[in-house]
Image (cartoon, rainbow, N blue to C red; front, top):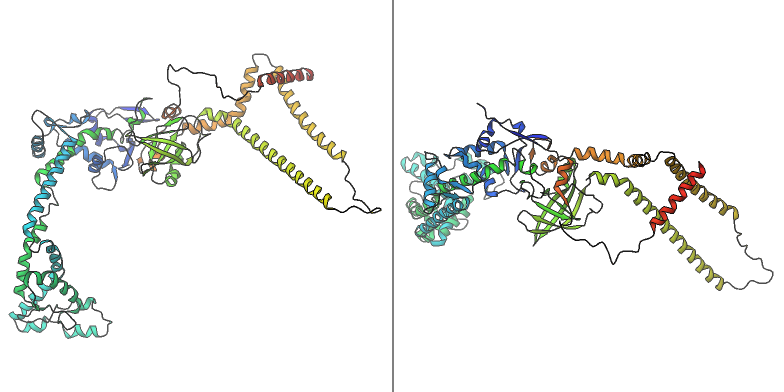
Length: 621
């Protein structure tokens, strides 16, 4: 019978419950279209890096669905009791290891590691044992090498120089044997006339490939390889440098100085280096059998501890969507908490390139704040989701503090913003804030222009005074400059325009007040509410649609995840991801501020204004 999976609804979609070992073992039966993610990166998530490296079988830096399933099957094949996969143990119990051909080496390794009276092989004990086995094997190999070095530390250089000419020397002495076997082979084993003629028309150098392909020296029965230096040494010029290095590094130290190398010398030299060559080949690239068993034991201990939590952050996002407010974060992609602007943002992910990440993550419709974090010379870049409050004080350059999952604090500085609606409250007030900001900007512009005009007039006045002082007295009878007359009509027009503007405002205000007074008393609140909705309604409607369509997927996809579902972050859940500053329960609060600015009697002004509007409305009516 197929496994009966259970699902829970979170994030606007169904997610599988992985509560038992049976659920975990049956994941290979679950249609992968129902998996929340099909791939996740090894770096940039909060999970044991050693365990991730073991699961990442191809070492490409990503864990995909087949690799997770293979790790589950590997563990199940070595466990007599797969139920330990769901118990949250920090290792594997001795009694849970399978006692068969596959599990017997692990069981023997576990028994050798466990002190008397203990029955659980922890992850860290197995890891230390593997390191110990590897260190001991390497130490034994290095100790054996002391007797395998006929030239001491220079033996390795002698071997390298010998290896560089070994194939060519073997080729030469085999040719010489053939010449000794049959005289007719003597000339055939040397360079042919055609081969030498083909070189005559080419631009030659000592490294020419066709020259290097010729025999090392003149072939003959019992011939030797010339070892002399210089252009008349008699060896193939393409090999002369390597032969010279071979002579200095191996022949002279091992056989003594000589002008030529015979085949018997060559065999004797190889015999002296054979022990060192065999020792190098025995270097423990593979662990001893005991160490391999301990390594598999460590893998099993890690899988018992980590496979269930990984599945619940991969096949489902249970640790993200079922977190209760106020409890510590547990999702693997949440790397810490950013404290900034009186808020704590708990949905923080690591990023490598903020610009590239924002290009895709912006499609999430979540307000994202990118920060560079620094701690003791270390650097970290994060993207934090702000899902409660407003964005009025979020700006590039502001500083905060980032706490990672280990509790370490980092200095955080905002470097980039991706702006989206944060809350309906922000959307409600946004038209009024924009209006106030626009009015403030216009008033600042008017004040600046007036100040500039006044400064210009003062400068003109100062220049005029200077000119009158410097101008010589006017002679009697000379014509005088006309003085500009005050233009009454111009200023009358200005005053008329100002009066019309004030009158229009008064008329509009009177019309609003008259309309309100024409309503019944219980209709007035509805009218005011309708007016507010008329102003704030469009912004709130747009924000509502965006807030309902917030999606976690693009944020994770930009980090290399393959999110396979529309992981929504609705308004209530999003609000829980960003905590606003609140006074602790039972705290006392003093409302008197000794440094508060003196308040204007705006209540009195407002009452007078209301009376004026009411009187104007009554008079108009």
